[in-house]
Image (cartoon, rainbow, N blue to C red):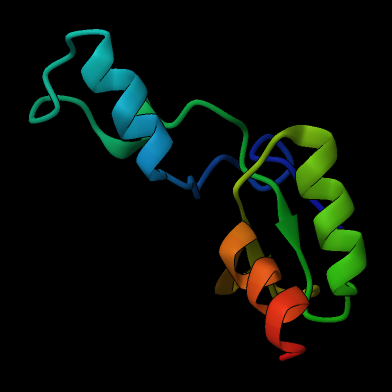
Length: 94
């Protein structure tokens, strides 16, 4: 199960290091904007029941480095899954 920011009311966003790099390269003032202003992409979520394979495919399809893990019924965030987390599973099987 996945949702975009529009589907969740836009209450959450993910700001990653690439977002900061893009803003800095554009000459932007990193002190003034909010995280929502700097975040480049839509928020995409997965649930704890989604497989890592599903999450990895979703991240690859959308060019994402992170997805927010939310409870399926409440939409409450419970974690963040990153490409580094996936790499760790591939490398160490954990």
